[in-house]
Length: 128
Image 1: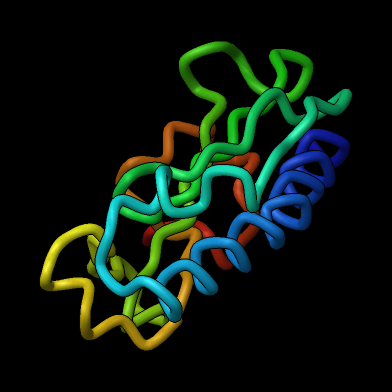
Image 2 (image 1 turned 180 degrees about the vertical axis):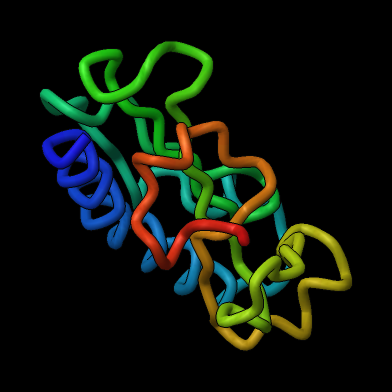
């Protein structure tokens, strides 16, 4: 589990450019479909540990890990835009809808959409 957890951290680190792309698109274009707004400003090539990093229309970032890290179907970590990143279960904000206009720029890895095995999650990403 120790090695797999370090690979999960690798994926979170690799997602920093996706977070920057979403933040910049939001700052310049406001509430729009973030997958389209960031098209061309973020690309990702698979690594030994991370299969895919994808920006969703809502602005959330899905990190899919290789099966060497976690089994298929239990290998996705979601980073969500939120105004309460320190909450145990933060409320995600959909940046493609009017409610997203109030986003303060916070991110959280505590998402109910995450399917990654809990023992592989960094402690700051676990929902208690």
